[in-house]
Structure formats: C-alpha cells, structure tokens
Image (cartoon, rainbow, N blue to C red; front, top):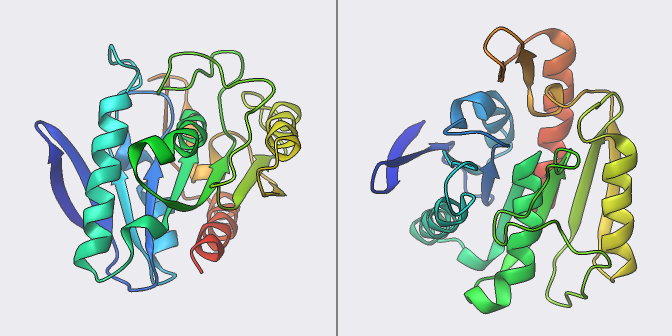
Length: 229
C-alpha cells in the first residue's frame, strides 16, 4: 500500500500495482474514512487492479466536492503513470460515495473526463442522500446521459439504511433514462457490503473480517473487477 497526499492535508492510499486497470473507491458519509474500506480495496486489488482510496469529508462546507474532484484527478494520474487510459477509470462508491459516483457521471462531459463504469454499493443513505456535487437530491426523473458507461448497482438484502427498495428505485430511474444498468443483490447489510460493521459505541462503521463479511467482500470485489475488464 502506498499512502500519498492528493491535496494539501488530504491523503489517499493506493492498493496494488496491477496493470488490469484503476479503480477509484469512495467511502460513504463521514470524514476521512479510507481505512474503513481498506479490506475491500485489498480484495479488489487482488484482481490485478490498482485501487485508489481517498479520505473525503461529506461534512465539509462544499459537501466534499473538492475532495472528490481532487481524488479523481489523482486517480487519473495513477492511471497515466501506469501506462493506462485515464478516461477508463472505474469509480466504485459505497453509500453516499455511490451517490457521488452518479453525480460525477452526470458532470463528466463538463469536467472533460471519461468514466468507464461505476459500481454503486448500497448507494445513498436513505432520505439524507444528497449529491455532494450539488447539495441536492439526485434528480427524478434522471436526465439522459449518452456518455455513461455501465452502471453496476449492488444492493444489500438486509440493508435498513439504503434499503433494497430504495436502491432498486434508483436503478429503475437510471434505466428509465437510458443509463445502461445491471442489478445484483448480495446477502449483506449496509456495512458488510463494504466489509465493515457498525460500532454503536463510537457511532461509526469499522472494518469487519468475520467469514460471512469476507465472503460478501469477495463477491463485491469480483463485481468491481468485472467492471474493469
């Protein structure tokens, strides 16, 4: 693992050194939680990928927008330095990070970047889910996005935060607007879909390595890896 500063005072980790592609993995709501999804990043990297995992701050005055964009630019640099196409990134987002990934694709043409695919892991977090790029809910109905690559939506069967119904509703809205979507449901909850668990004593998600969570993480890593091929 290589830890770097991607903007003043902001850090990220690069897991793996494979040549199969680059994945930008965004954690969910909270501040500087890259370590929480490190286990999932390592599983993804095991498929021959480089996985860029930044800290970002959803509570920042801009909703985390500047962190997200700076980490995107750094991930593009990782791809370039590895001799890979910076416009062929896969962006995977867990929870609010998934909402951010959808918002990024909507803005990709104006940013002058290409995104090969996105993977949404229990995207959003219920009624609180606001696009960090706008501070507003994702639109309903969605605008068309002819530039969008595949959108792989993964829901957790036992998720009580981003419930399967909410996630399936998002997928249906994207599909109705012509976004190319796939749908997978895994035997997980809101935390274990990203190899984490909720710790009530500290009121945050922490890494988890019980056998059931590891099995889910391996399945999710396969889905992310398949989006990179």
